[in-house]
Image 1 (tube, rainbow, N blue to C red):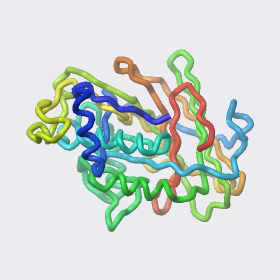
Image 2 (image 1 turned 30 degrees about the vertical axis):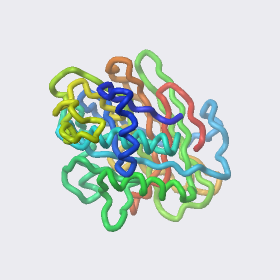
Image 3 (image 1 turned 90 degrees about the vertical axis):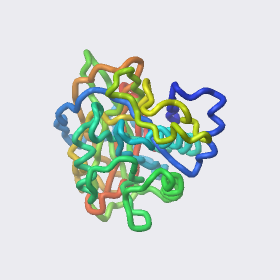
Length: 306
């Protein structure tokens, strides 16, 4: 199911203005606790049949796309970017996973800066990567370029995919991420997994969101304040379950019909209000760092192969 992002400050009669900005693309944010230490993960190389509900590796995978945005509450383009991200997810339902990495506010974790450095950039907000690929010479795209990049990526075939299952018992979560292949991989691959809180809103000053569009009459965020109080932050990465660039997949698993299972256990943080936890996991090329496929699932549920 596609993720629906909400901004409480937008009245229904302003929503039509959103679609005037279809060429721009953005992200809402959602988390409010400090980063916790990365958990130790283990590739236990279990057979798929040992994971309840996960079916054998399919012959064909659906290509999904990862949009990672680098942002914080001082990013004045964030409100407009959030609404444009919603438009992208509505256009491609269920096929675009959004991960918002806050850099320097109360929702920040160090992982955002680490990813930027590993991809060759310094700390900067108001940009995103699409599958961590380079487009016209740059990996870091402003919101006006996201939609076209996503559309192009979704048109490509996929030689790998993921299934996710998880359970929560006494506030301890166990997550299984299974990476599957329908051809022999010709390069090393990694699996990365995020714990994401889908929606956070707080009246605290530290969560107020800068708004560059407060004085733009044609914007849905016109006259909403700068900063916007009680702004809803969506899809904030709260915890990284793997290394910065992922955990290595056993080469023996990366063959036609092969699979490798990663198991993660961690204490579930306190939710913010009625927010929901979800797992976003993706396979990347260990050499080029390109994201090859992505899958997401609500914590405590099964999501079979994409």
